[in-house]
Length: 474
Image 1 (spheres, rainbow, N blue to C red):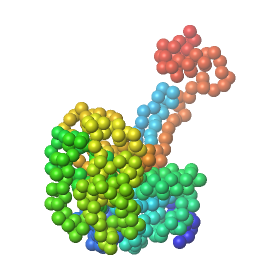
Image 2 (cartoon, one colour; image 1 turned 90 degrees about the horizontal axis):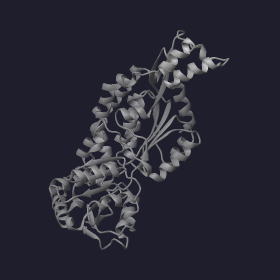
Image 3 (cartoon, rainbow, N blue to C red; image 1 turned 90 degrees about the vertical axis):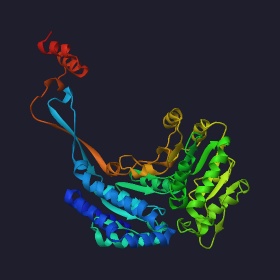
Image 4 (cartoon, rainbow, N blue to C red; image 1 turned 120 degrees about the horizontal axis):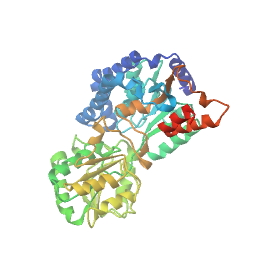
């Protein structure tokens, strides 16, 4: 791979204006849709190879969401591309003004391994819709999906403007050494800092979709069965906890724990059976390194006696059963980093309102969840918790709405995507003011006189009476 040559080729294509046309954008979006439509089995097989991802999860969370994003972009593209008329003022009268969205140029998308199909193509959809040339770097940790993406995009897309670069750290490093007009990175904060540092050398703007410890606050006045099912769906039903918006830990009151635990144990057994390691509805841990990382969290001396459900491991098949821990110390390893796996600690507080202070004492998460029927608590949560997104009485569904921005704040990331927000992330909002040769105001030009000063002060202050007086010489 010659990163410099690839960027040069794509800049040449972009320079022709080809990618800016509505027709080109539509043709490429339709080609992306065909990839998902025509190769569903190939994609689900790759996701199973990389993660043992259940077929239903692969379809709902990756293929279907990608197709939905494509259809939305195709439906709304003309409206998104249309210049936005804005008001002018007396200062520029007579004039008209508009905001014109224009593509940034040649952009780089660095994807993640946990949802390797969706998280690769969702930002690419936004970049193409905005009229950019794109290089996609899929994650080498999901090699089967990376290979499928490289093959299918090579077959279906305009390779003079859209390229896939496979590889690991050396290839990513070579790409980051190039000058881009935007970099979109999905992954962890450690690599996010490397991406940001590389981008700073060229003053390249960056979107960082990171993660964090997303809390779930559980009040007592709720339907436990529904709440627990939704927590399980967001935790273990999302790639076995290997998702940036998966619940990372639960906060509830001491009195609430017995009911909550009983409900969780019952529903987990219904979903995954008495031996969840044999369930075909749970993804495996992505690789041996991550298995060892999660095992280290479980084997920490501070939490070994805190497991109240699960904890079984199968290292040969890289499987860890849904595991619940109770009252883990705040200084334990499991509370110091994003878990990104099937482990779920429960933290207890004296009263549920204390959860807000607990969350705010830590870095801002990508998501925060609250289960309650208390409207006052709900409002306090919305007003006082800073996170990428909030969801009341469910988990993870916020990502399914294209009308909501998806992105982090602080340590959980910067910038946003989904729907129009993706289009905007890869666009520059160009300010355009139009004037004719009529309505020229001599007072703006030297030599400056007292009369001109009176006129301009009245004009800029919006003083109509003063403006009339200046004009008639009073």
